[in-house]
Image (cartoon, rainbow, N blue to C red; front, side):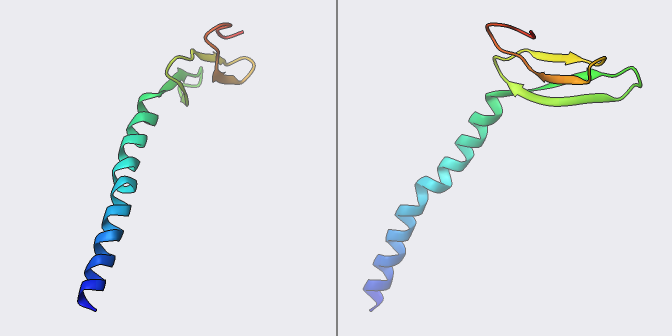
Length: 76
């Protein structure tokens, strides 16, 4: 009975190890693949949003338009 419990605990530890290690690397990869865009409004407040690392930050205060552009078209 004790051997069965030890085998079961070892099997769970082996199965759970990749999941525990994978969450930190995916979080770091997601953080590296994005950037924070900031635009100061005329009122003095700062508008922030998140874009991809290769996307330009697009802002038009007149239209209330704050978004991410594309690599090919820019902020069209």
